[in-house]
Amino acid sequence: MPCRRILRPFPILAAALALIPAAPLPAAETGPPLPVPAPPMPGPDWESQFAMLQPELPMPSRTVFEPGMGAAPVERALEIRKGQSLIALLTRAGIHAGDAHGAARELAKVMDLRRLRVGETVTLTLAGGRKPGVSGALSGLRMKKDAHTEVGVGRLIDGSFQSFERQRRLLQTPVSVRGEIASSLYADGVRHGAPAALMLDVFRLFSYSVDLQRDIQPGDRFELLFDRYSEADGTVADYGEIQYAALQNGGQRMQFYRFESEPGVFEYFDAEGEGVRRALLATPVDSARITSSFGKRRHPILGYSRMHRGVDFGAPTGTPIRAAGDGTVVSRGWKGAYGRYIRIRHRGGYQTAYAHLSRYAKGSRQGRRVKQGQVIGYVGSSGLSTGPHLHYEVLVNGRQVNPVKLKLPSGKSLKGEALAGFRLHRDEIDRKLDELAVGALADAG
Ligand SMILES: [Zn+2]
Image 1 (tube, helix red, strand yellow):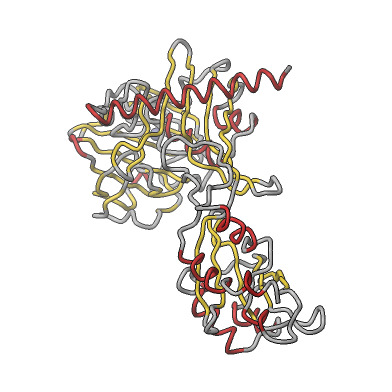
Image 2 (image 1 turned 135 degrees about the vertical axis):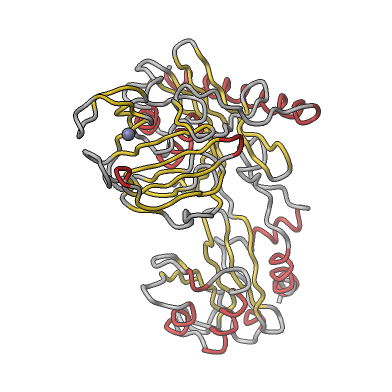
């Protein structure tokens, strides 16, 4: 039995492997991302054994050692059907009920089994049988928990199951998207290849400092940097956060760098280390147009001229409305011509009000604390209104002011060591952008 010597340590190694934290891919949140080659292993011997335990290859099993059971373990990939529990999937695959329950109980330590997704693949490793193709005992199983994580169980030498959770091997590639705005920042970002979900983040990021309806002009340019995570076959598994976003708006250039200002806290800063987070958002509704500004106007329903004490954002019914800043809901309910109405009190004597809502969002009841950007309700046409829009007011000490003219305090500025760290990070991002730009030129020939 020449292979016996090699095979024997496998189950123990499998268990050990389960307890070893996954090979570290830099998480999207931890500073400058780099393309990640296969993570280093602690030695050639260990590496070769690890390679044999890679998901692509059958997991070893104790049955390998039983006399007469010479066949190699086999893998079976099964799709979760609608309403099917893991135990049902396993027993249907011919797994002994005791093993099915044992494996499921162990897997539940690393994953919520009530949240199995229909169509998701569960890969079983079955001990080789005497005849090829005959299912043997369950020696392990694994599945995707999310784009970045794999979970599973492996059988130990004593027959019990041991769960594991490890980072999946994804190829991390920095991607820069740059272009000229023809219609809107959002639409043109998507057109140039940025994922729609990231463009919403970009939109929100810039809405702290630019009025995206009034100030953006065709010909303005943008540049973005983010990470793409790909599977071995090249399909995209996920995208990381926006690492950098810049907007050339007329003669003004805005640059935002994502930076960990305190452990676990990621914020965006301009090139000088000033936080871009404003006390109030300039645009409290996603991708809307200003349809009526603050000031005197002829009222569309009443006919006579009067003061318009807010800003109207035209948007389809149901468009989410976001709290312009952190604060407390001081009023929520029907308010005459305003229809469904919410008012939030913020620090510094500011209040914001939102009118004509079609409905309220959860967590926006009177007295509740809300976070900046939190959805508090949805655009509608309730009250005295000619069509779906958000009527938005900013009040200073109880009086409506023009939100567009408001000079609000910006977020925190970095100092000392944090600022020094930020500058290094910023320079690294700039270097990466330059490299990607050179690469793009080379590709273009
Ligand atoms: Zn209005």
